[in-house]
Image 1 (cartoon, helix red, strand yellow):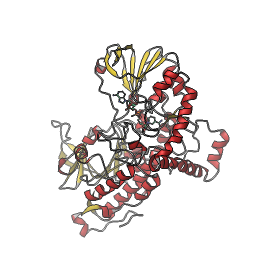
Image 2: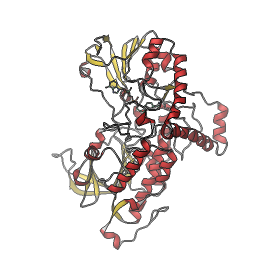
Image 3: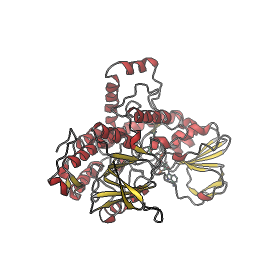
Image 4: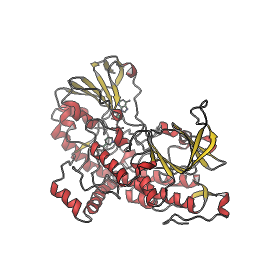
Length: 522
Ligand code: NAP
């Protein structure tokens, strides 16, 4: 890594003395699962000239931030982990947030990547500089110049605060599920939880028995499935540790079982009726009160919104001190929430579990590609889309982890992330070995890719199931999820298809010889 003394002023401090520009080959933004996986993969390929900028003070991203009571994962523990670092010691079939965060920290330590991470470094702006074919990054710790930029910020990094009249004037504590205020003791308080998504259905049972009263504000009822949760026995964990290939084999079984969802949700949505039956029977058993059952029965096809699993949510809703409020929120007063039917519900604290800004993330404003145009502007014009969820036309030398249509509605996001990492590392190696100044996906290739993708999507329950969800943009297009088997995503990213990109050679490339990064097409 080179630090130039060229006097360039950090853009955020125009009157401050010049800050030296730090020069790197690759700048990765985000120290969550994506950033960690990429750092490990780059080092394994012998690529050392990179830095990972993380705005928080530790590894983990969304798993570091989401510390709300009851936080856990819906994907089986053995599947929700890196392929290169199996954990035989998962304590349960589905892991809690603390255990996942411990695992993530363990991966970072075991693979010695800490020195590559700059914590408390927030990206302020990233500008493509045409003349030098480099990205100029403004950060809270000064400027960085990088040949390549990888956004590993993920989709769940920007909390969505609802635009509710008076929320800012509420006297008591108000916090988002991803920014849980652990200094607030909710015991014996009247609490409101806004939202009934994946986070809320974990929070509600976790706090219902300690609060004085709980109002759950439901806009759309979720479909909820049994959670096949149990502890792994000592014997099972011993076997996972000692029997060669057992964790791999078990992961493969879990993986294949999850792929069945792709058939049901995408290829043959009428089959969701079978899933609907399971969820309806569960509801019938767990919600004895007819009126409550009517209120929590969804009006859209199973799978249209993300399918949730919990054994405790419905029983929590049935408690004496819990109300499910289906009348919309008209506004918030200093000590109460008023619903559109005119009811005033006194509350002491408000938990906002309204999800994340996924299709309109403010992080899209940070990146300015060709002609100074931001991702927000490009997306507004062409819709939120990318090539293979990983590259965007107009943004040379930039890659995205978990970009548009690379989310998975039914299995492990880490599988998708690792598929993208392989592709990105191949691209990095190609840029190095071929002495390339810039690579940029061709707009017509990206367009063709997306019309094909949306054609596959058109049958899926996500767009035909009659619901509104965070998968959809304002025009109703699913811009978040991958509409096929996940192994097809992996296959299409298995090698960097440079022929789909416009390539500009470096001027010096005609004369200079370079030592090749191994395992790459030259
Ligand atoms: P979410 O699934 O987007 O749910 C947000 C909830 O807030 C929905 O019920 C939504 O209602 C409601 N809402 C949004 N804006 C509102 C408003 N203005 N007024 C009233 N209600 C409003 O968010 P999340 O629960 O935080 O989960 C986000 C994603 O994180 C998940 O889909 C999943 O990928 C991940 N996650 C996973 C787990 C897990 O594995 N168990 C746990 C937590 C999070 P509508 O449905 O009507 O929009």
